[in-house]
Image (cartoon, rainbow, N blue to C red; front, top):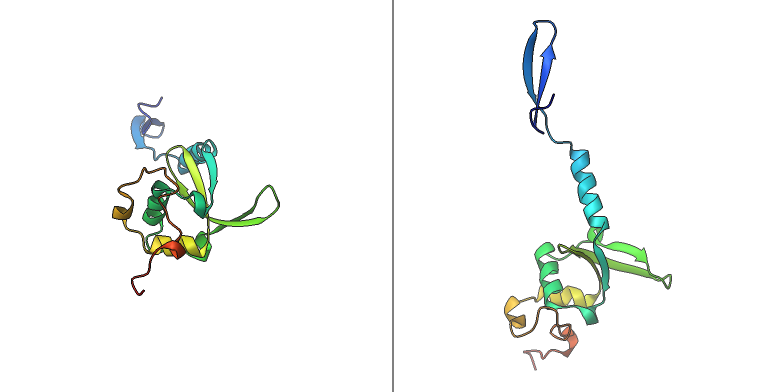
Length: 137
């Protein structure tokens, strides 16, 4: 009978003794738990226009050197259009952020201090990179 979740006592018939065996957690069950947890997450598709400082910070944290083609998820939306996005996850939400050149430039130039005066959920805080002033003017 199990002593704990990680220890099991076995009876050895050959020498009539009890042996304690340590049992490793089943990775399959752990992965299944994570899979179930991910299935319960709210899923949100985010366009650049709706990108918030919080989501941008999550993107830069997850993809500090930018994202590669193998990290892009492709799917069809309800209009049967192919969407390409990168994924970031919070405790309760899975965000699929649409890939664009604006997103790549914004991630590359990200500075946390640029957003300190804005609410984390303010989509107007993240400016279109083509609207920002160039230092070369």
